Amino acid sequence: MTEALDLLLVAGRTALIYGVVLVLLRLIGRRQIGQTTPSDLVVLLLVSEAVQNAMLGGDETLAGGLVSMATLLLIGWVIEHLTLRFPRLERWIEGRASVVVEQGRIDRKAVRAQKISEDDLIAALRGHGIASLDEASMVVIEGNGRVSVLKRPPDPRFDPRR
Image 1 (tube, rainbow, N blue to C red):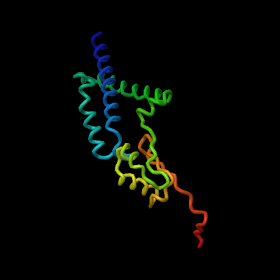
Image 2 (image 1 turned 45 degrees about the vertical axis):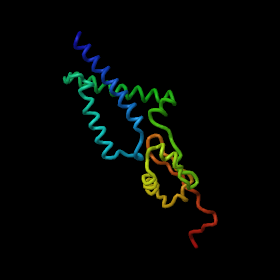
Image 3 (image 1 turned 135 degrees about the vertical axis):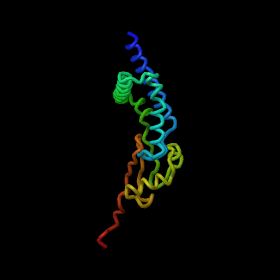
Image 4 (image 1 turned 90 degrees about the vertical axis):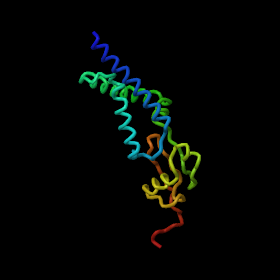
């Protein structure tokens, strides 16, 4: 009976750690656009190492590790289904799309709110083949950090054959 209780405690600690880490990562916010930087990777690796013993509570048995892993997978599955059902929860967990450029003008307030630099934004635009802000009708940073670009249509008077 105590072994089953110990495994249940591992699951409870794992669920609590998952929630705390999720909240802290959302509060820290996005610093880069659509990619994991080396410093982000180091933080994630260190966080996982730091919380390992807290999740297992000194129970480093195979069963404890499997229960912890299964709990994380179950929480991920539950959150995925809850975010499909409850859009507000999805916006909180995944983030919201934010228009950062409209009609060739940068919305500096929106860029700051996304916790990215204008240099990173310009680099992302170059990655989409945008050489100048004038070429962008709208630029949106999606909730997942990806950049969506709507290009301005070419001037109807422009004829590339000339």
